[in-house]
Amino acid sequence: MITTRWTAVVAIGALSVLGLTACSSEAETDATTSPSTSATAEATVDNSASEAVLEDITWTDGEEDAPTLEFESPLTVDATAARVVTEGDGDAIEEGALINLAYTVWSGEDGSQIYSTYETGATEPVTYAEAGLDPVLYEVLQGQTVGTDFIYASPGAEDADGNMSASQYMAVTVDSITTVLDGPEGEAVEPEEGLPTVTLDDTGAPSIDFTDAGEMPTELVVQPLIEGTGDVVEETDTLTVNYTGWIWDGEQFDSSWDRGTTASFSLSQVIAGWTQGLAGQTVGSQVLLVIPPDLGYGDSDTATIPGGSTLVFVVDILAAS
Image 1 (cartoon, rainbow, N blue to C red):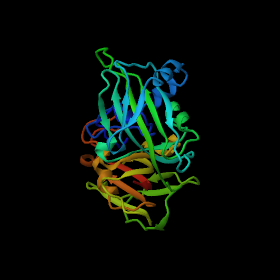
Image 2: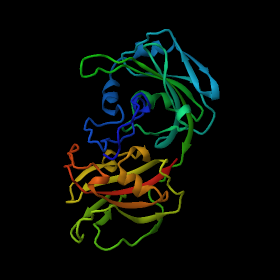
Image 3: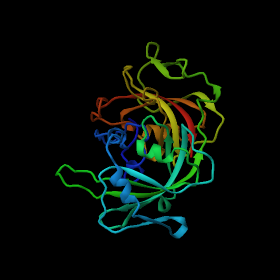
Image 4: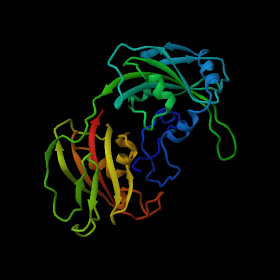
């Protein structure tokens, strides 16, 4: 519960499952950046008809290698589906790898392009892990390498008025792989007095104790617990992290550790306390953040977080790209 909602639902939010429950700073509570729940359920659906539809789509490399998809419209699918167009010849995609995807998105209604990472200049990171990833995406990338091109299709969604949106088709290339640390790497830092005490279990998952904490801070607190030796994080970076979050009174409300997979997201898509607190830190660091309401979710209730809450996070920065 740290991200704002993706501005383009047609982007990889329809493709990747970042394993991250997302609530925006505007207190959106309908919650997820990705189809992890629906995609898992959909895995039991026969999508052979949708796979057949993809055979009628032509992939063409356009300007600056941005792919174009050509098909007769309108074109619809009733389930997610994917097919490999060209196998790559780069590094192998292994379980847990952070893969960076470049893609264009096309409307099944009229065949028009509706999104392109080639125009934004930023690839989309996706953690390749069976836990939490769309089963169709996981399967199509199994055994593939950097450079692989594939088409991914997703059906339309019904809005509150019962209207269905158009199916979407994505021309996706595995652009690169980013190395992700297994855990924090660096020098331990003695925290300032008056902060909550952080303890790690045998797996590295944090717990927190407020017994000896002083008064609740009213401003952002950024306390490195381990100072990493990797690259400096920029505000425009996409990070891969493990994290746990608590309300100041000690109640935990979110944890990537509990989900069993790391989280990847752009620092431009998170609450302000994360952007300000993590920019300038280094890869390999473990950071304690204390975030006041004005840099978190404000005065409105957000999912299980009461309005006006001061939040505490322990964040392991495992990669930045």
